[in-house]
Image (cartoon, rainbow, N blue to C red):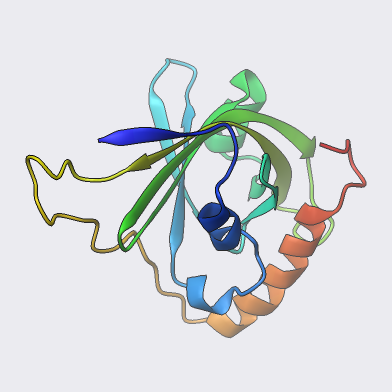
Length: 167
């Protein structure tokens, strides 16, 4: 059962999405949901190398510039980010706008800003499921992890820059 945490990221989410220590999150996935042109949910997976909290009210993302996810955002400007890891499940809802169609360090990506509107935390209902909790989130493996970690720092740094439209 989810409960509202308000309209900004809590300290735990700010830490998880800070982009400062990428190694422990290198294999974890952040889920991004948009709404397609038929009104249906459209899921996408991002890594912690493509998502960073600029502050407690703004999350920057790098998504493929020609993807359906980015097209959905351009069309309706809404998205939900799910951060699901051991013992936590957060849903971050917000309005999204494209800051830059093509990033300098990753030209295949658009630079987006999600303005946080609602944050929810989800957990099992103790009355009906005593002791139940999330065991893990979605993870992935990459044979070029070290290469990705180096590139991730460039992407995170560019996402944090305010040269575009200053969200």
